[in-house]
Length: 150
Image 1 (tube, helix red, strand yellow):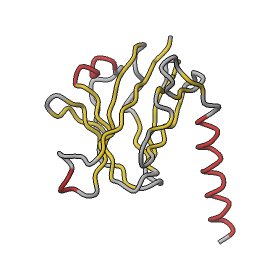
Image 2: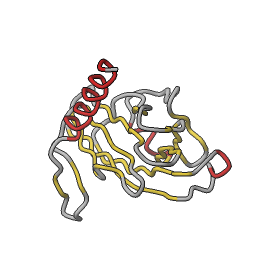
Image 3: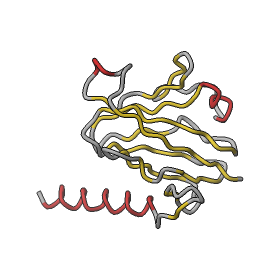
Image 4: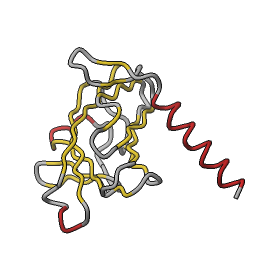
């Protein structure tokens, strides 16, 4: 029991440490100081930070779902050229006009970009739904973006 409590405390402190001190963009969206790896929290009504800034040749972004919904992350298909790899599986797949992620359910499941991304700005959406029946018709859609700096 104590070991579980310590494990949870370590996990939460690492998520908070990864989130860093929030900043604001000119449009008022939350962002972070650029770093190599970044965690985005999916909440019931927002993603935090909304603008993720990463840098470095080994950059990565992870999404953790703290909402009451099942969530999937969607990039426009054109973002495929922004990845440094050609294979997006196992967590993402090209699906028509989108690059779509596997489902993320609950706070303990992390979804991570398949490989580092090239410098640029990449918009994404988080589709949120109660169950599989609503996967193609999400009940809520959140938006964010990834800025990869040199």
